Each structure stands twice: as structure tokens, then as C-alpha cells.
Image 1 (cartoon, rainbow, N blue to C red):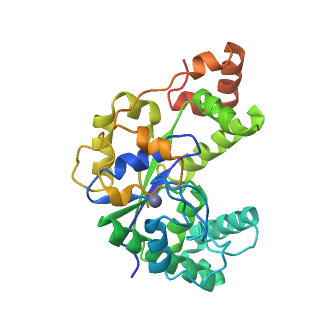
Image 2 (image 1 turned 30 degrees about the vertical axis):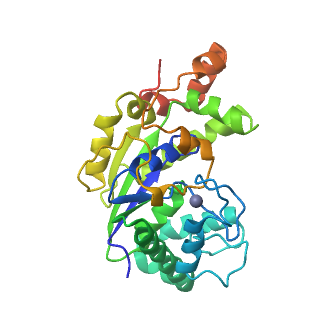
Length: 301
Ligand SMILES: [Zn+2]
């Protein structure tokens, strides 16, 4: 059975998606796996301290999703219907088909009916199995791929409830984080920032077929409880206290650095270290490259 609602957290990398997943997981009725796209037999670390190969949670996910017989390179849950073999081409093909469906209606997906059906079937199993294992009621999808959200919106009939929590972050702080983890030139990273947020505004904000909430990571960090209350109401649950250390053992299985969850004590702190890490010239260059969008989100000063 297909889920009746689809809830997403949309943001580029280094925008606090894992933090948001940890916070949402402190709600008794919500579960988020963060931005996890693990492969079968993946040796990546789970924050519980095991690897995905040995973690009981992920083993059960594989078993319950009926994935034992699959290719070991296959991801446990595909980000999109598989239309093309390579990731980038597949994303473009899905975007094209979603656009077509936006004009012609969801029946346009009949062109790729078997890919769509296989994808939807696995996606609904993911919802169901994740909720069963964690005893949560709602699944919050933290996958960062914005085309996926757009594709869902144009794929499903009757149209379900689709909620998108869009997180923004100061592009200068984003660039300072990028430098820690990648060596791409500044213009590549600023382009990614710009494209992502532009896409989100174009397809998610002011979209009458979606419920949309924008949240600045900076506001979350400076006034967490007030903003988390809005976020919980947005996802349709009674607000609970989320700014506490990780409450539920069954929801400590995000893919990622163990220290992230062990260090997490529920308190949020605004990281403004970019002001020292980046020169004044770099900061103004980043703003120049990301405006007017950056100013629109309030990242001017
Ligand atoms: Zn684990």
C-alpha cells in the first residue's frame, strides 16, 4: 500500500541535514534515516559503531525489504526510478519526465511504467519497514536529491500530501564547510548552492500541490525550540521536546560519523567560524556569486 503522505527535508550538503534527522528522531512518532543511500554489504560506518554490514538495524532493513538476492552494488533504496544506467543521466531523464508529467499529467510516467512501479513499490516498503522497526508513525525522507521530490510530485495520482522542509544556510558558512571535505573550486560549490536553492524555490515554494516550509539553519541553531515546534506542526505531529540527547535506541542508525551522534547533547550552537576562516575578499566574492538569492534568504551582512 502506498503511503498517504510524503515528507522530505531538502537541502544541499553541509546544511544540517544529519542534525535535523537526529532532532526529528527524538520525536516518538517520527523517523528519519538522514541522507542515507547505503549499498548492500556496505562497509560504511553506522553511527551505532558497527558497520552497515554488521549493524543489526541495517541487516534487518535488508531482510525485511526482501533485498537478499540483489546485486551487492545496488543501493538499498534507489533515489529515483531507474530509467538510465548512469546516475547523472538518470537524474536528467527523471527530471525531463517529471516536467513532462507536470504538463501532461502523471500518465506521462506510463512511458517508464515498470521503472516507476518498481521504484514506488520499494519506496513504500522503505516507509513501512523503517516505521515498523522503529515503531514510528511517519517517515521523514532526508535524501538530498531535489529531483526525487519533484518527480514524486508529478508521478503520483491521486496526489498525496507532499511536505518539503527546505533548509538554507549562509553560503559563506557552506563554502567554509566545503573546504573541509572537498577540493572543488569555489565557483563550483557556489554554483551548486545557487542551483539547489533556485530549484527549491522554483519547484517547491509557492507550489500549490505541496506544503512548504523554509528554515534557515542559523535560526534553528539560535532558537531551536521555537523553530522545531513549527517544524513538528508542519509535519503534522504534536510538538515534543527534541533538543535532548538521542532518545531512542532504534533510531541511532544513521550512516555517518559515530562522533556526530555521540557528541550530540541536544544543544545547538551557531557556527560562525567562516568569518575567521575566509578572508573578507572571499566572503564578498561568495556573496556576489550567490546573490540575489543569498540576500533573499537574509545572508547579506
Ligand atoms: Zn547501526
